[in-house]
Amino acid sequence: MAETMTTNGTATDVQTFQNYIGGQWRDAASGETFEDRNPARQSDLIGRFPKSTAEDVDAAVKAARDAYDGWRLMPAPQRGDILRKLGDILTERKSELAHAMTREMGKPFFETKGDVQEAIDTAYYAATEGRRLFGHTVPSELSNKFNMSIRLPIGVVGVITAWNFPVAVPTWKMFPAVLAGNTVVFKPSEEAPHSGMLLVQAMIDAGFPDGVVNLVQGAGDVGQAIVEHEGTNVITFTGSTETGSHIGAVCGRMHKRFSFEMGGKNPAIVMEDADLDLALEGLLWGAFGTTGQRCTATSRLIVHEDVHDKLVDMLKARAADLQLGYGNEDATEMGPMINGKAIEKVERYVEIAKNEGATLALGGERATGDGLDDGHFFQPTIFTGVTPEMRVAKEEVFGPFLSVIKIKSFDEAIEVANNIPYGLSSAVYTKDVARAFRAMRDIEAGITYINGPTIGAEAHMPFGGVKGTGNGHREGGWEVFDFYTETKTVYVDYSGTLQKAQIDNVED
Ligand code: NDP
Image (cartoon, rainbow, N blue to C red; front, side, top):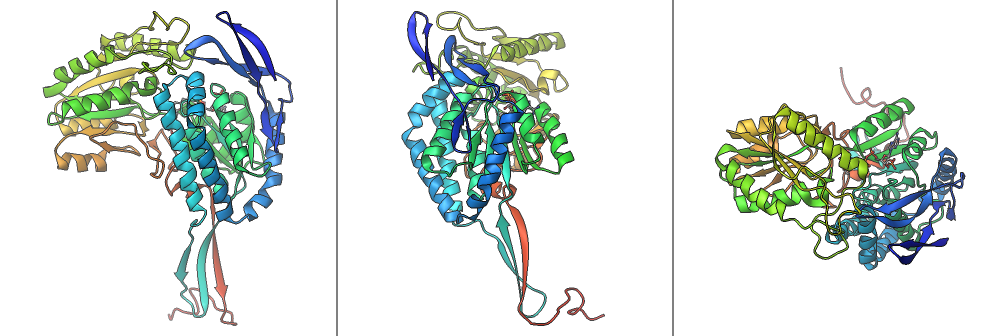
């Protein structure tokens, strides 16, 4: 459905979008909608999306349950063929999807193209897994007996995601889930419903049978209804540690399998022997890419005292020059923050840092001026003189905000790096191979980059964090298939007699 509105004097069509349940596009049962706006240009209304409730979730879970038997019984290589076609469709639509994503959540076009590419890589990777999904065959301890383990799907998977990787992250979850034979109910963030809808449209066009993929738009209460529904067997969540803890309690009580990817406070250690030019590029990309709104963003620079002043000067000069603007314009290097609340949170942390005695080295304010006043822009911000016990050294700000901590030795660097409740990503810049290997072993994080920034996950590698960031599961790579399958152990006794394990074959 389209209506015409006027944005800055230009007539544009504003569409009203729907949920996708059991193979049909439907309005929310409530009939209500919510608005989705461009964070770089608030006057740009992208569309209206269904404000769903538990009633819509119930319909989606039932549709997913109805589709489950047909889907799980389709041979996995055939399921893989649909994912391969999906990879082709996403490849054809890469620019279109990336432009829509940039308009909706703000990161520049060159970044959203990377987001779609990650989805393409994930689709092709999952497609090939349809011809593997390995179990094990293991020798039996008894004669004429055959032992093996096989992988089976689990049921209906509830997928709840954040807005900052609105295409890539849902694909990390949905593609392996469906390849393994599960069906899904997907709730995108209310800040990125359009990207979620376009992704589901691509899945429909690839030929998934009705009910295998269901889309329910809405806010946190919709996510909560998915988690609490008796019919969802598995919950996979990406978002804040606070929301994740809440969901985890429900899943524990209801005996659901759940995986969490949550917040981070990622350190980049730069030692005195580092290539400072290389470190500078990595720090700029790590701290200010996606406007610092990545779970893997570099939010702490832990730098040796011998190179501290020089590196901070280099960083300030380059960060001050970053071109802010609407991400669908070619010159833009850093986009807006997602919304007004996110800006206010960064402002609060600027005050906290000042009150704790840190020194504002750059930024610290909303960015205004030509092309910025209608959006949620914040200046790249750097605080020096941060000590490990300060809140800005430990808490996730989720914005273009870098805390610089000076250290005297590598031992101290590792200690400071680990002095946080999170453990997602980490980076070390050094030319000393012994330090590099110590970092791999001793930093408490799911990911460590040597001489690279804290961001740069590849789709075929495991992704996830330790401590407050996760609960031990990994997305990406092969390990994700462990999460979306149940292992069944099978014994085939062809001896024709009763054989008792641990008894018949052991002499006292
Ligand atoms: P939130 O936790 O606010 O939201 C994440 C998702 O959960 C959204 O879809 C949200 O709905 C939904 N939700 C909110 N409340 C509930 C509830 N009670 N029950 C079920 N679902 C609920 O996170 P943000 O969207 O603000 O994302 C930013 C956070 O995500 C940061 O902490 C970041 O570090 C983390 N993140 C982690 C990643 C990782 O892989 N480790 C990757 C990307 C981000 P809605 O927003 O629509 O209300």
